[in-house]
Length: 353
Image 1 (cartoon, one colour):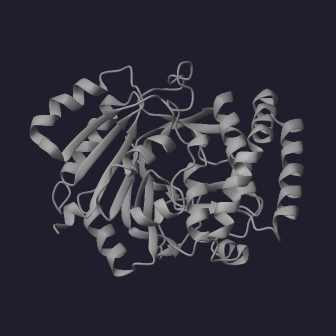
Image 2 (cartoon, helix red, strand yellow):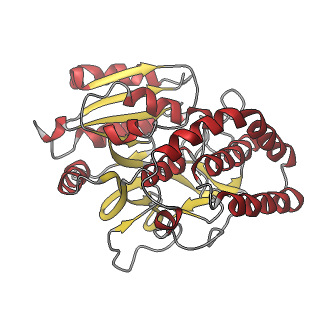
């Protein structure tokens, strides 16, 4: 099999016509050849469809454009994964730019170590390529997650590392492994969907690894602004649901107590109380469904919590929390399109708190 045919590229997008063209151009220039690409459009209202149609003659059957109802990036990635027939899938966001050798290098690493279920690398800010956006993801003791090494200058030599999860800005994954653990949780809509997937992969005994040779550029605005209440709502509900699903029966009581204490302090000291209370109410309503998923996840467990968290940084909270502030999408600007489709239009926070 040709190397380009080993992976299907899945790109979820929403109102990112210009960014998507840059991402597709970078995928088209991969040294292994042009892989099959599935663009999953969450009902964009810009010119995304027309732009992709213009590219179609040059791509032929290598480019598939699928439009669906706006259910967020988790559902969009599952939608693409369900249509992949290759051993691997490359999940990449539509504001990320790959260098030409990214797919060749990642496939070589993945094939050399079959136990790896998810593989990523350095995500660098496009506005400052010498500064790290993420080198995989870290996970705190009671479920808060953040991008590892976020904000640090790209200087010292980095080694390959095991992680609990990988930022889906660019992640090569083994299709069978992702399907085996249930794929992305589509209830999450936005935020923590990649954290939750990585945690479940680790519990099932798979490896989640980052390599410094794998570098991508993330095109976000250099400024930060207040997180929209919908972002706060989704992040708060999702991190709680992920904790309930993934922590072991032995450690869940104290992790849950710590999380609830943090949430109470968060509610008192920070704004957007309505969003945080709605997140708690959502989890109470969803508890039966979460507990069914928990039973499935725990039945697949091959690693203890201690083994999983050994590859976390050992912190309870992010080293540099932004206090509810977040990076803005470089194309859409601070307002984005948070009215019609709140979470699908928003970009990733620099931390998950």
